[in-house]
Length: 129
Image (tube, rainbow, N blue to C red; front, side):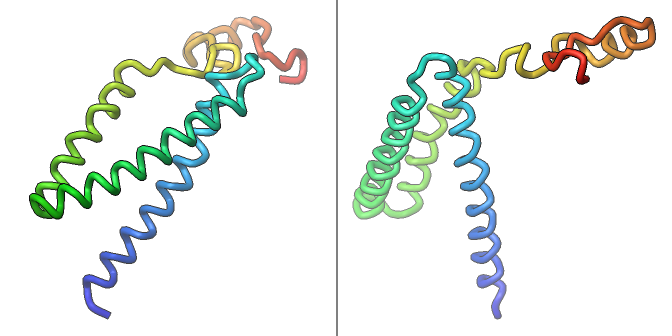
């Protein structure tokens, strides 16, 4: 096989791993956001619809731009467009896991000091932990 075959295969593997991680994480984030509201299925349906519509529009827009301006310009334009939601998500998406759920109400140093001084655990599992 040629080197290009290995490059294509490696990108396909990376795409599969990324899709698996993303597919799991977006369901978990949706669950965290809608937790306790009774609207998990509605929220999951809306986010799935938004991703499907985005994928469809992106494919059409990419093809139209590539046909008019070339593949390199289409790649650059869609890449810049994808940075907008990525930056917004990075700066404005709050942590969805509460302190109680994470079990990290104290730093590890404080927890170790508490253990050394004989303090009781603040575990959500009661006496089991």
